[in-house]
Image (cartoon, rainbow, N blue to C red; front, side, top):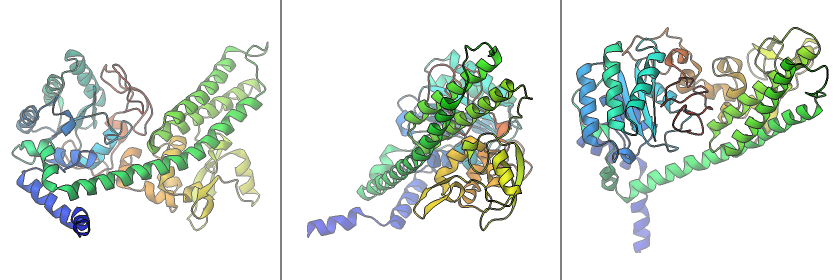
Length: 455
């Protein structure tokens, strides 16, 4: 009988837990949630402009966070500061984009993650190069001192940042730092619910990565076979330095793709793999043109129908089954097929409904497709498909740099849609910066460490 009673008490209904959690947060005078992560961080930043994960309070205390939040409130500038650990809750490849999308304010976003520090900014608030320069200077001036670094950054950024702040008025330490004690108040049911949710997300990520790994391994193998079939010898008498450079570039891209895929721990980390394969195939196309004494090819995205076909050579009109017509990039072979009234050679993948074109295989394939085609053009290419519907979300619109509203001014809400080019990338040069890559992933932190997935 005791067992029968204990089970329903542990499985507290989600609605009741949510109500209890909301009441506790109201009593704490802060919007942050019981668990850390991007959602809790963005909720706190909307109110206080400062967020510190509980795991980092030993290095940056609630009192320090409250003082910094007061400074920002007094300055009335759209500057946001995060101090978080280097954990999967704050993915290196997407944290900056996710936070900017969820907070939705044109401003400056300074993120201390683990032992690294970087600042991103909308151009209308502060030129990205300035944000990167200030962050690098602060990081170098105060090694391993989070408080001194972020305060130095804020002090320098305040006079240069345009727009007004968005602090909710009045600074509560509970709104800045997620209180560890709050978890105890929620009770055993809350712990079980959070653990169950986290476990489901982890299982889903593993399943999606396994699904992607099969497809990406096929892509890597296909590119390796292209290299094996290539009749080129760097030491041949007719080979010049430019040809050897193209060949080396292709080989390096192949090795990079294999290495990144072997180390991939999350679906988002697949994107730099397909980026490397796309880059390698273009190097082979360039090599072929040099050897045949033809004009060098235009840098174009891969064939829409199957990226393994290599760079596209022209745009064609195409309507997927059940979808509207749109213009897509095609390789010469698929363009010829369409012109003669035949179906293109479409890449299909395994799904629960059998083999399907990749664009009908679901949102798990967005990192794979994003690496090949880039963020900005994907929604247009895939409109009306299963994958296209997933990519039409506000968060993806941000990452792709879509700005249909024309852009908000500094300090104003811009939704999740803005020019990610203005917001800055990961190609900064500060010692605390995260060099290389873009918001889609890939690239290492420049100086002082490597997040592995590119922050």
